[in-house]
Structure formats: C-alpha cells, structure tokens
Image (cartoon, rainbow, N blue to C red; front, side, top):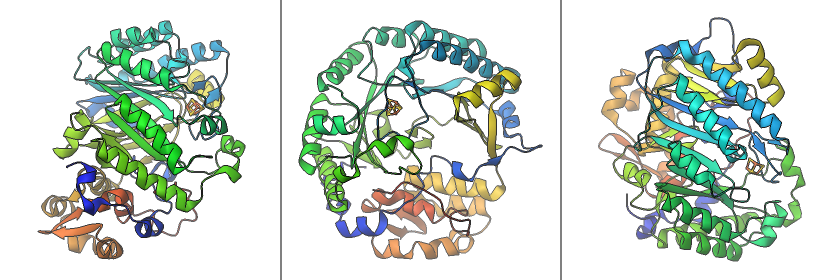
Length: 461
Ligand code: SF4
C-alpha cells in the first residue's frame, strides 16, 4: 500500500461521501455487539478458552477526573480514588475466575483502555499487571504488544518509567483537537506542549509506537482550525493517527447533550474537513490503513497492512491475532472460538456480579457456522481489503458468486462507483473504496439485512 496522496484514485469526493456516509457498524466484531442476547443456560462461549494457543487481555479502567462532552465511552467521573482501588480488587478477582478455565497460553497482547487507565496510581498499575502475571502467562518480551491509553492532561511523566518497567511499549494519547475554542466547547483543555513533552519522554524511554486520537466534526471546528491542529500533530510525528468522525448521538450518550449544537459544523464543512485532513496526512507521509487509521511507513501496522497481515479487534486495527480475548472490567467484551460475552456496563452491577459469582458476563453470542463464515469474510475485507475466491470457496463449500449471490448484488452500486471490483474471481476493495470498507463489509452482514428494527450506528464519515 503506498501513501494515500500518491493516488488520485483515493480522492474523496463530496458526491461519494454524501451517498455512502450514512450509519454503518464499525465491525470490531461480527456479529456486532448490539446483536448480543442475554446469556442463557448452556451458552458458555468461554469453554473454548481451554483450547487456545495464544491470548489477548483487555482491562477496562472506567475512571476519569472530568467529563469530556463528546464522550461515548463507558466511564465514571470521580475524584474519589478509593473507588478505583477497590475496583482493581474486583478486576483481579474476575481474572482469577478464568484461572482454571483457560489453557496455559502465552499472552500476546495486553491493552489497558478506558476511561483513563492512567487514573490509577503507579503502585496500582503495578498491582494490576503483576496480579495478572500471577494468573496468565504474561511475558516480558518486547515483541508483545503492551499498550495503554493515556490522558495527556493528567499524565505524570514518571509513570512512563513504571509503565516501561511493567513491559508497556505502546502509548495512545487522546488529543481530539488543539484549538482553544473547540477544547472549551468539549470541556477538554489540553496544552499541545504537554502532548509534545509526553511524546518525547516516551520515545526516550523506548516506547515503540505512539498513537494520537483526533476527532473531526466537533463544535467550533472549521477547515482552518483542524488544519492548524494537524500541522501541530504532524510536527510531533506520532507513529499512528486515528482520525475519528464525531458521532453526535445525544439521545444515547448523555454527555453529548452538553454540546451546543448551534456550534456544530454544517455537513458540507465536515466533509471539507475530512478531505483536507486526509490530504494533509498523506502529504506528511502517513499511509492510510483503512477506515480512520493512518501510520508512518516504518510503523509495524503500516508494514502489516502492506503485507496483508493486519487484524482487527475491539481496539481497532492490530498486529497479533490471538485465539481468544479476555476482557476484564465493566463493559469489557471477551471472545473465543465459541462466541462472545460481555460484562455489565454499570460499575455497581459489575462490582455486585463479581462479588457474587466472580464473573460479570450478562450477554453474549454463541457462534453458528454461518456466523463464523461471515466473520471470516468481514475481517478479510476490513483488514486485507480483498476476498480470495478460492479461500472463500473452501470455507463456504461453493463458489463465491454462488454462495453469496445476494451479497454481491448488494455490492453492485459500489462496483459501479469504483469502490469494489472483481479481479481474477477475487473481490477487491479499490484504493478509493478503502474509505468505505465498512459499507462493503456490511453487504455480508446477515443480521443487518433482516427486518430487526432500527439500529443506531455511527456514520461512516
Ligand atoms: S473522552 Fe476519555 S477522558 Fe474524556 S470522559 Fe471520555 S473516557 Fe474520560
């Protein structure tokens, strides 16, 4: 995959955006989490954990010091540290529930997400990782992805030493926007100098990959303010950038009701922002990986994308596929070959469930053969941008055109628009089509096309 700006074919057009930017799942899983059903008797997807050869771990730390108005995460705003400390006891208790239920497989990924994982003190971060190390096969090996999300507004530089000592080698910083007026409107004031300082200090300590999250479509943002933010970001040179589109769903996310909708950019301005930002990132040498992710050519994710080895999980694009994921903490999702299971969202429900049973899963999904096949197709499209017709025929027991005639029919308009093409029997997403990967994947989502009532997904762009 070459840099985005070198391909005229990748240009985003207003016309395509207006036709394909409607709500669509992000496919961090298939089936998507909104399809999950209450866990019933006999539904035990975790039983397949006994058969795995590799494992990913995710820990959700929901605590934050203050509320960002755009936020759609599962979080708890508090300044009472005692809450976080006792939550950690429950997380370790939950981890112990898995001790006799999981094969002795090496952990190939550990991710701390939130909320704000660095809300935890250094000693509690140590307690968490060392506690997990007593239960799971965590190795001090720098090829393993140990990643952590950090809030630059409250981050303590000394914590970098603790994190490095514990094995963390990847850092993700929530930036969103550097413009002061935008920052005030979303209640997230963050000095660019703090971000720069953390980035330099993390590099000095050997963090291999530093990632920034940005958002476009925020109140008071304009093409020019976003340009200034991206200029500053590019000068700091993060290895990866995620440029998310702000999905304003106030009926679903209470915090967003605090956003002044009069200050929101008009749809045409949002499109212009997206186009401008993408051009700037391309000009700065960032490669487009898919959906909303960019990386410098030397970054492992960009190399994996070029080699067709990208993978996808609940954190987005990733390098190392594991046979299973155990998600610990409120709202965390786990998966195995047997299916998915998700923990209670509310802190109170999670804590009570762990106290009572040591386990907090309340809903999930048992995979059928058809789910597994479609999961394979959707992940291939999201990560490799192609469906190999021979591989599909082997799995489906019939040629692609025969087994998925209705799906290919749904893709006809995207083919006419040059977003997908047929190549030697394979189905290939074109360079331009990479903006609309999830629209292509959606054609293979069996549940999206059944009349199951209204769903609320974020818009594509
Ligand atoms: S955006 Fe991050 S720091 Fe802000 S409230 Fe949400 S989870 Fe907390």
